[in-house]
Amino acid sequence: MHNQFGIRFEAVRKTFGAETIIPSLDLDIISGERLVLLGPSGCGKTTIMRLIAGLEQVSSGDIYMGGKKVNGMDASERNVSMVFQNYALYPHMTVFDNMAFSLKLRKVPKTEMTRRIQEIADKLELGHLLKRKPRELSGGQRQRVALGRAIAQQSPYFLLDEPLSNLDAQLRTNARNELVELHETYPTTMIYVTHDQVEAMTIGHRIAVLRKGQVQQISSPDDIYNRPANKFVATFIGNPPMNVVSVQMSDNGLLFAEQEIILPNVIRAELVRQSGRQVLLGIRPEALKLQLGVEPRSSGFSVKGEYLRTEYLGAQYVHHVAVQQQRLLIATPTPAGVSPHSNVTITASFEHLHFFDAGEGEQRIALFERDRSQNTEYLPQGIAQ
Image (cartoon, rainbow, N blue to C red; front, side):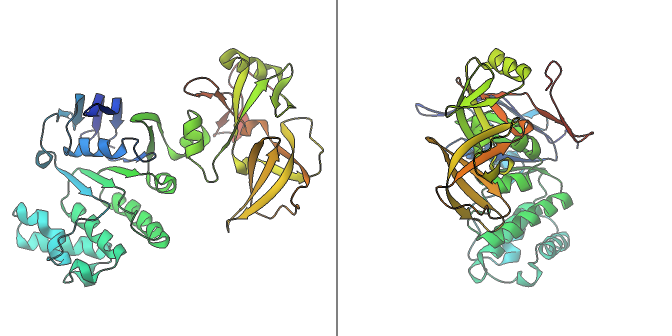
């Protein structure tokens, strides 16, 4: 990737009156990448997008685009393309005229303009609709017209603010694939705003998870999922979400709902060193195994519980199990064959356990990592099973 069209935020702060939306943001967006801004409503992701576009100005700090400071620069000077949630098409114009609008303003020669619009329309399967008005199109077609209009501008920055949220589930899936393929054809710097984790995981080269205007973690989808930086990221990504429970350190390991989980001494010592006596334990539902009866195994995570119910989600079954006052979710590809109120045992391997500090920030305590070259699990230097 080339760096000439990268974007940098340096200590950017944004307030609206007495309310601080972004307290202080440092962010590097790599030229040519697809960066997804992911987070719940009100986390500041759309504000960041608007700051890039020049629709809002920073309260303090600096924004650089292509190495040039753009503070105070109007939207028209920043050479960005935007696609909004509501598409913002001109109802009195044809599909062709909507897509060609910015090119006409720039006085692009008619022959070149027609060639470019036809090429983009064909890629978006809109070639046969160029003479229609927006009211004659489906929601999915209107969304593609808005994308085509942005692509036609050939701007180095492509900003998309929840552009698929008005589409039904099947259309969203198709549109996600189209977006990725379009970006591979037109490799601009793409910033994509969404609260939908599936969109984020499937579209982004990298994901920036936001909370209250602050980046909690920015990394690849694989890292975000398998090595979440804190409890918030761990529970925001994944469906069903990661189980996170409070546990106490014991002489031999952990106490969870008055049941002891034996840990290797070096792991326990590292947890105590980093986090004291109180720890948050996280386990993804798909990493847990369920068996009838109460025969806890001698190694790994193993607790007894009461089976409550099953949710069938098509591709998987989600089982609800009570461990005293706590509830764990277990995801399996097949039915468990267990009746409600049966006694069950839940198990998991050590390498699937995530530990988070119970204090402020609830940061990850990194014990296990994956050595991808060997496809084996290992503990960092100084920790061994």
